[in-house]
Length: 601
Ligand code: HEM
Image (cartoon, rainbow, N blue to C red; front, side):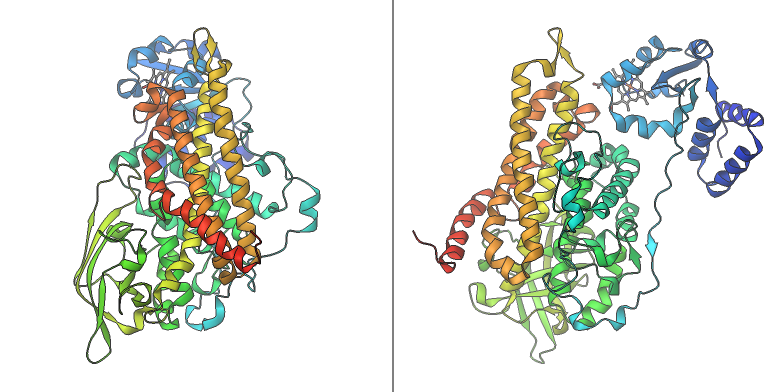
């Protein structure tokens, strides 16, 4: 274990602590003995305080300390690797550099480097909270997947997913929470009344945000560059119970021992699902979000709803744990939104026991590391009546190749080929030649996921731009003091809020209607909302980059999120139904629905 001068100093300082503090400290140390930086951090924050005059003695390159927000950092070694240069650090050596720090960095930098560089705090600074323990995944004893009943996954209307909003929630707004930047979070975070949310949603929001801010945000720029996300993060999605909650169904206790710490399964509803997707999207990375749920949240629901019990019992527990991965394969090199014309074929063997699958699928999110592929295939004649859905397991004849895309880096966009792949007939999802219904049922859930992500991404662009506009000065004024900048922010905020409010309405309708009713009645509105969300996203990404200027054009640093999101825009406006198809469908489908409702033109 590395042992530095500063940790030795911290240890010596222990002798001035009371015995109860020591006991507490040692119990923490015992618990975390493997985590050197965490221990160093705890020692520093609990034990060491300095006078500003002491800090002032460390202003030379061989011993360089600075103060940020009342905390003291030893940057002696770090100065050589500081991306902004060592001289700039030396100029503020021995001083309070809080103002300079915030000028060039954001919160994530401090979070990332704090455990490595912090050596204590200034005298008089309120004792900082020790880093939060990660909430432990709540494991229950009820994991008996084999006992599951075929009917266990009920449509939303009759299942426990649609509790009516509790009376008391309508009376009192929830406590304001978050950074309180106007429109920087959904209105219900900021003290607005809402009929949709209660304390369980608030607790979930707090839980997910703490995880994202500690374990994900500080590392995103590195992951983005390497186009990867560590597999442990995906596994945590399983262990923390989030994967199981993202299926548009009731929480499937029968298939997973994991529970979400903040919300008991029987209380789970679609607004909880909204909160999880929304909070992980606050990372401002389509690549990250799709790495987590881009294959899973669209590949698994058809299996849950339409596959045979034996197949589900065999594959679902591993997927919900985050150990196995699944993706959805619909799009082909020649058939995108035009699903009815897909050509990947599945021919039954003469003994009727297998299908032999041949064909190609393109732009398949997560395909490159998937174990299972939910695949639309042609089993019958032309058109939508000849389409079936098969669960294909990675086996001989399945090849995956990662594609190089403009954005959503790290999401594993894949070209998949199936060459004489033998698939047991038991892996048919739904009925033969009735796959179109399976695919269509899935679309609403998929699109709502995209809309949630886009809306938060738009909000992130706005929030980042708002923060930057309040610190960057040009022509003797802060950016926010220039009317042209306020105009940009106002135009972003109004579109984000309009989209978010429509989205909440649609999610509420999904909760109240059964799946079939929702598919028929809401398909048009969801298509229109998807277009609304992606157009808003494109607008906000553009305006945010303009506000950031050069910093939004270069990767990393303060503009990292908006620069990245700008490249992710097309990854949202094209797949899951392009803007053009969505807008057209929104009117055609609504006309059909309203004809049935007795529309008088
Ligand atoms: C705890 C102390 C500090 C740490 C851990 C730190 C870390 C970093 C990191 C990681 C970057 C890369 C850009 C990014 O990803 O945001 C950076 C850039 C930079 N830092 Fe620091 N820094 C510290 C203190 C300071 C201070 C006190 C100043 C100014 C006096 C400063 C000035 C800069 C500048 C000018 C850049 C380049 C910004 C750009 O590319 O636009 N840093 N710093």
